[in-house]
Image 1 (cartoon, rainbow, N blue to C red):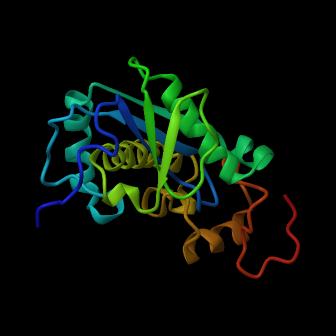
Image 2: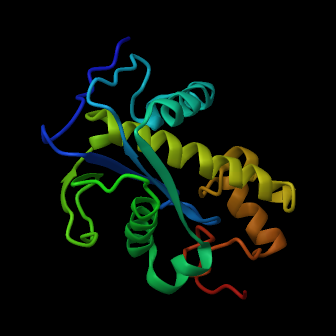
Image 3: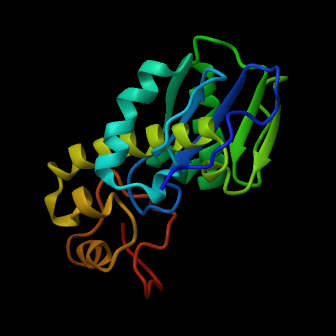
Length: 202
């Protein structure tokens, strides 16, 4: 099935698409990416990363990195998530990704319905934007794949939490491991880590 994504939101501007990954996780950082694509970019496979298989995302990543005019990934640690809350962490991760772009964008398009303005650059929030615009979809693929790689890496340190499969999300197995083994330095301690959590000793 061919994608029906749009090449840009505002014609005539250097536009960066932004998206994040990992907001709903119990462990690990929030990742975000910003991507500026050429106006003639097209890829029939590219879509919202959640609609793609892991194999498809990993196939797309080097294509995006090669063909993008600029791209970058920003990270906010789980400790920072606990300090500033996950919504602000997602904004900060996107700001950090835009900070690193080798081309300064004139306009940002953000997946979702909220964003904290970055410098003086105008932005538009687009609900389900990762399924509507190539640059946001590309950002979603980069954020997701880079975060997944990190979770697989730390899964080697803490194999009992099954992070190589659940990527830190609140699966039954993940919560049972927290109940049995406690937390790690990668867990978000302000999150509801147990499904029936009333009190929890960290």
